[in-house]
Image (cartoon, rainbow over all chains, first blue to last red; front, side):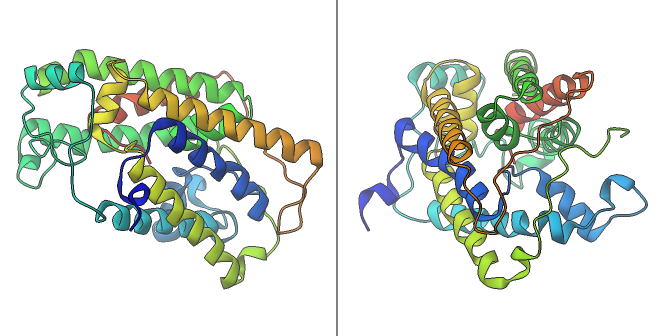
Length: 185
Length: 120
C-alpha cells in the first residue's frame, strides 16, 4: 500500500480534493454537496409523523445523498483501519492547553477520556456526546446546512446565508471552546 | 420548529433510480470518507486546534476546498455544462429571509461542533 493512502494528508492536498466533490456531484446529477440534509432524509424515511418538514419524496430528493453518506461511512471505516495508528499531529500549544484541561490520552481521533462507553456516564462524556450531538443536529437543521453544505457548497457559490451561518459556526465554536469546555473538562 | 423547508433540492428525473448510477454516488462517498479521514478534519483534536487558532491546517483545508469548488463551479457555469443526468447544472440559491435562522442555527451548530468535535 503506497504511503499516501495511509499517511495523513497535508492541507494543500486535502483541501482541493475535498473541494472537488462539489463539481463532481453537480456533474453527476446536478446535486448540491451537503451531508446534513441526510438527517432530514432519514427522519422522512423512517419517522415522518405528521410534520410537514418531513413530508416530501425523500427517495427523489435524497436517496442519492443517503447512498453518498453510506459511502462516506464505509470509506471512513476502511481508511481508519489502514496503516498503523498514530497520534494526530496537533500543534504543541494545543497539546499543552488540552493537558492543562486534563486531557492525557492523545492517541486516536478523539480523547478516550471523553469519548468512550465508560465516559458516557460522566458529565463531560455525556455533555460532549449527547448535548453536543443534539446541538449539532438541531443547529444544522435550523441553519439549513453544516460545514459541507454552508461552508463549502454555500461559500463556493458566494451565498450570503451561508456566510452568516459560517460566522455562526465559529462564534458558537469559540464560545464553547473558551467558556464551556474549561468548566466541563 | 417553524422554519420552512429550506434548500428545496431540484428534482432531476429518474436518473438516480437506476442502480448503476447510485453506484457512482457510493464510490464518490467512499472517496470522500477516505479524504475526511486522511485529512483528519473529523478529529476532535484538530477541531480544538482550529478553534484555538493554533494551526493553519483546518483553515487551509476549508479555504482551499472553497477556492477549488468556486473555481470549478464558475468554469462549469461558463461552459454551460450539463450533468450526466442531462440537466444544465444549477445551484438553487438559499432564501435569506431575516437571516436569523442562519446566524442562530449556525451558532448552535458551532457550540455542538466544538463539544463533539465532528460535523455531519
